[in-house]
Length: 141
Image: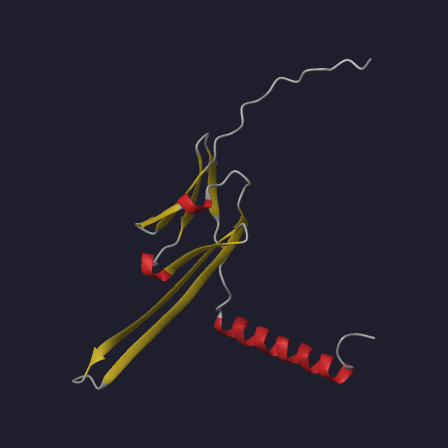
């Protein structure tokens, strides 16, 4: 037996399907950010294209070792004039949502981000790598 009675389970399933259908009709599912990652000795660099977003539209957080990037863009335009007695309006909405696990050597408190010309650059400094130690065999007596 499951957690829910069958009738409640069916109702929850139908509600989920209805919500998914609504989101599909309005085409407002989150876009997964496709980024580029470059690993350097002193840092990791991430680069994401986020056209139309300003720095106020982007929120970056770190929670329990996960870097989360969310962005939301809303715009509204109206065309027309009272003389023409006709107005046209258009609304656009979109959001980005992505997360990734930070590596163990990330300096979380020093992460920096910059958004310029529709490109989000995130720099994650690294702790010093421990020097590679030579393996020494110990003889057993």
